Length: 206
Image 1 (cartoon, rainbow, N blue to C red):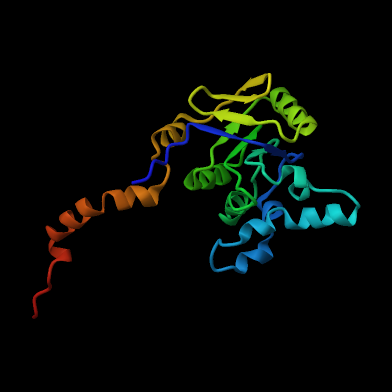
Image 2: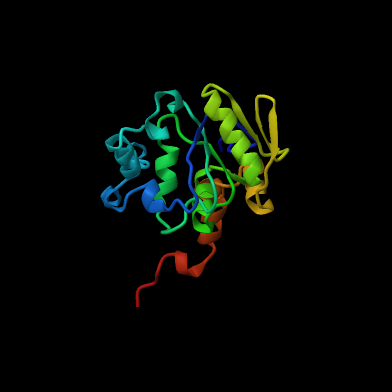
């Protein structure tokens, strides 16, 4: 079984401003007709990116200076709305792939979907989060380090405290966040137990 532990995620950052950004803004519903998650990264924030271009602006996800970002910085109640798994999937598959999210708070289902994909979502105090956003906005090449073991985020001289519930934290630190891998790891034990159960054995003709 591969080592799935998530203890330290490092990379450049991209920031998205605004509270209550819902899953429809992250990934539009019309794109949910896809039969797999392959290629969904291209549609992350599709509508707001287009609106920014029409208004003569540049959305952070279209900024070439942010194309290498692996850490997403957001505000309060990020990922609210529907339970669509496509939203975190699109972030995971955008460019290099978002590997960690730092925000003020997260919608519960979105948070759970991120855990299932191995994306830690850590919460920071509003003033610390804004300081982190300012630092990364001023220097797109600044490396941001999300240290789950120490519950810290570092960016140059800036260090802030973050939080994450103990359950998901334990899953990331031990590499037990991937339920499919967990099942596959125990497949021999499952098969052995199944062979002892009458309902799984050969059926007699009546």
